[in-house]
Length: 299
Image (cartoon, rainbow, N blue to C red; front, side):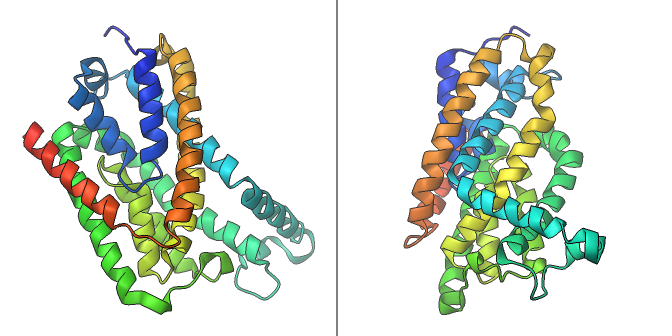
């Protein structure tokens, strides 16, 4: 297969990745649908190839997105990691078991939140390693992505209804009071995002709302939780960029990753303000309309 990825495509796809990874509209779904809609056959045909330069390119975009998230939440991550290092020092006197004690009075809120993020990352990390490739081969097709985008819209609408039902019972994740089981359920919900068209942030925000979090709290927890998942997934596959699959696209990948990082930073800044007073409904309507139109287009 001839490797062909223009810098315009790299910039456009980087911008698209940085926005749609954080907005609850599915970056993977848009990564499948947009090239097909634009007639970028070089990218469409590469998605299911044994050695795909486009998938290698997307790995770089994910790393760029994660760096954008880290930059935005840099102060939070510094506090969490400092709390983690401080807590680990207790191992010398209290034993290794202290690492898993996150509910006693001696644990700081920062360490507890860090532990919840680590635990919440485990389910999607394990499943992703096993099923990401076969699911992509089966469902990374325009019609499938369009159908799942419609399903994503329904998930978001359900989340909006649940938010109204919870009302004042919502809590703030920044208080680090989220139960361990809730963190695991929110983390596990990200597994659905392995299907092109289902949004990682969307399903985790909706699950967070069902666990009693406010929209703002669920969004912030979702973005913090997504950071290690996106970064580790990208770094795990990054060596492919320096192999044969990366030939001819390395500079384009660098450009796209920079664009994705900047777009992710701006997107999370916008969404952090958005969810203080607004809802998932506009994103649900967008997914519903675009999904249905694409179903008609690719059926």
